[in-house]
Length: 299
Image: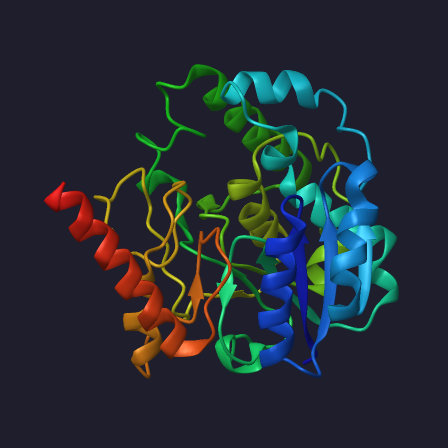
């Protein structure tokens, strides 16, 4: 199985450069592809600082899918359509570029994610043709509280039910619907080939759309893995979590503790600063954060 990295970015080219430098250091022979999903007019500035670290650079410039603005407005105010339809950017990458490149499975690495170690080791759990979705669980376990499907969120709920009606009618879908927290995502070529051709791609939300289509296609799903994100809809918040969608940065202490442990996490999200060099660098970063915290307490 040929694992490749699909680095998905849209802002802060210098931070993206820092992430790619780290990925290339630990993966000198791996194939690294860029999916740039930001403003196409800014793509040249990203390419200029990222291109030397990667094997291909793709710019997504498709217009929003039909009805996207209406669907986004039905979810939550202020959510960009590329967030709700991020999986369609992945499908477009496969359609326009990925189909011509060498890979069997892509590990999607987001611009504000840290990955330490060779990709083959970090994702040794993956078997050929499998997909991986962090935090995968039945929708029914979060249905009352998860904002994308909860009955209290009338617009989002209506979209979810419309999506279910479509896949039941079109594909005979009768399984227990699955969902996930879209932080760690790994997709096989076989899955993306089919997903890129789905009907009504604008319907639904990526965090249930991707796993449900994996169920429909009969795609094998990797469930024995260490990527356990914080499920904000049903779990109490933990500052020691290593993967979370909440916009609160992972602390240097959390990263340091995990890197010191043989069985510790090697993937962290989100982190919005340049990454220190190795364990020594993280120890220094932790010391600095501790000093700042003590200064605030004394003040």
